[in-house]
Length: 425
Image 1: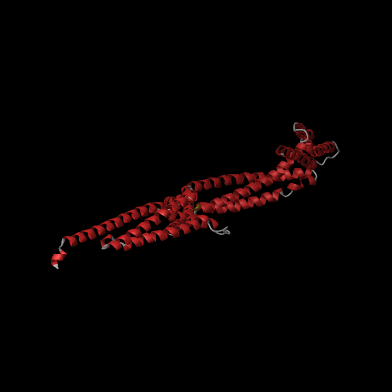
Image 2: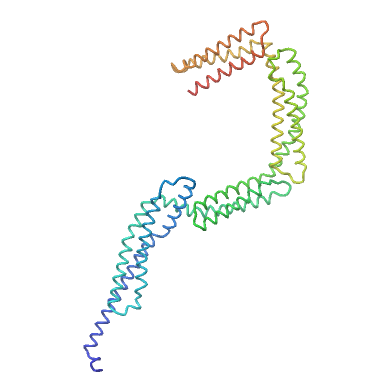
């Protein structure tokens, strides 16, 4: 028996069997390497693609929030189909790889089966590769936008975090002599938005992350600006309060001089001529009383150890408004007396100014293209007739000077409005 086992024929048979197995294993290894190369090429094309699609889908969901969806997104739907195919192909490759370890290819049939399955896996990988490339080419622009958002979101979050830090430092640097209660609330909101941005980023909601980060950055920047200008705003309020004190004294003096003005109006002109300003002294007195009240409260805030700048600024705006109303009431009476005096002492000057406006308007209409000026002829003629009637009225024995002043002003305003309309047309 031993002689037969060691015969030249048996040794030849073993060598032939070993050579056939080595060839089969070598072919399987080559197939394995080819499949691995195809897998690497496909993996390179797929790299980051699923994340880009997810970013695109997330952005679409953010845009469509609260709106009726027009239908499924073709990019997302096509990616789902393609992803299913690539997952299946990659699954076949990984299964073949796991089932055919070269260390366990101990016979030719098994090695040949390994080669066949690995060749098939490589062919499937190469077949799906152009589909992935076509998908990327077809949706290059939206995927590029999504990729930009994916890279932009972390940068926005970093900028928001830095902005919140700056805001916190600016609030601390504002000191203890001035305060703005709204700064703390605004800073808390910015911090919460920055935290929300980080959570959304971790969850892959890039659109939400970017929006929250932008909100945090804008809010924090606003806090920084308010905190950095707090001392300057406090100084402006103090200067404004001092100015209003001076203005109040001037308004009191003018209000005291209003009684003679009203007396002159009553003595020299009919009631209808100055009825519109009859309550001017009372309106001025009420506004001045408000000035005193609000200015007292403002002085109280300014004397406090810590100045609430927004509250003081609001009171300063209020007292300035009251002072403006007092001044307007006083001026309405003094201006009315001046207008009536001017008209009664030199009616020709008042009407002459209106006549000059009328002449200018006539020249303007004449210079317009033919037909265009005709559209305003009726308006112009009506205003001209009103001026003529006014000229006749001032020649009457006892003219109504209040009507003369008001009508002259109305005719002038009508001419101005007509010219503006003509120019716009």
